[in-house]
Length: 422
Image (tube, rainbow, N blue to C red; front, side):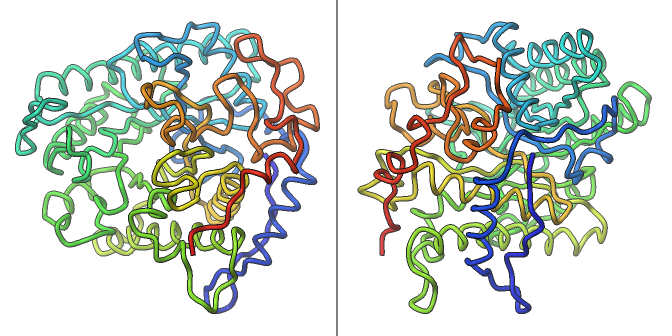
């Protein structure tokens, strides 16, 4: 991918919106086809995480309104080729309950066999639930032990089969944060399975250079309120190989909007608001690092998830915070990429493609529109430039060529861009 060494902060650590705008202009106007790195097969997690030559992304290949419609191996290969052309080399999946993740790994393996220069690695998610998850009466004091055990076993088996591809196992996705009311568990549950996997590494049943983590909201990693601070969390921080934290200023434009509205002395309008959004993520990241450093001065902290939706008919749309559109998404995407890549932080940006199953009953729900590509493979504004430079020539998604949204016409896009709520 193309990134530019522009510093967004002044000597006092404050964001400089002018520098942010300069970055956007440079990236969108001048960034051509992503440069490819020399093939370096079978790198370890420690070599991949924080490496700017291996940009990361969160990935789901679902095309339909239900996950019962599993993408085919051919469809997954199409997506892998698109992501590879975009410069992505590391992707994150979320569970192994369904065939999706194992088929993603299989698709990568077959692409590598056909073309040794093809390079893609996986952060494999293992889903963790509490007892009675997704029912009317979840018991957050206990875990669904049998289901979680089977999920961990599937993750282990897939890693053993494809050790050249699976480089990280993440135990749980937002499984400790309390607003995950349908399924969250206490840190001791995550700690149990992290210790189990670390034990398999010690015994030689998993690669010694495989990294184990859990991927969760910044607050659950100690960056939020005291309700999350306990001895089990401290033990978990010490047990994982690195901390994978999530940060979502997009959602905070509704739930915690102080940064979004800004102060009278701060630049008005969209560009100033988006500079503050990136700064908001930086602050949440720093709060996690501060907590982790109390326990381990050298534990790496990376971003397992962050993103910005391009459409919303609810909290984030025209009648809400006015956060959702492709222009703001582009500002956030490039701002986060520049900051993390220049700081040695991996960022599994959420997400590659729109996934309509996430809110099937409401097609314009923001959850369906976090992708950098639409369901049909149209490239949103954040990645218009590599499309126009021919970076995706010859590639298709379900028969659709990779084309820019709005027919590549900025004036059409601008009609959908609203200033943040004052």
